[in-house]
Image (cartoon, rainbow, N blue to C red; front, side):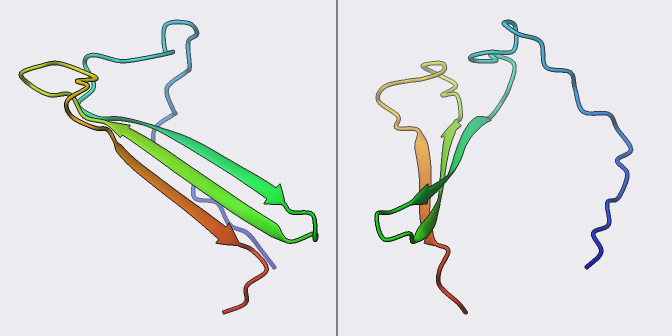
Length: 82
């Protein structure tokens, strides 16, 4: 098996902590991911993915508690064959 990678035209931005941690008011949309691998007591493997999106409300600003964030979650049984 060969894996190929296409070079990118643009270098990814450098992460600067603590400046890059938390909310970025200039961003129209922000999202965060949590990915994990789990194993149960019987040795079955699972993958989990969770995404949390934030889109600011033009009237109330960011993180308006009256407007729920858009969560997305998935759990996969990696032992399944298709």
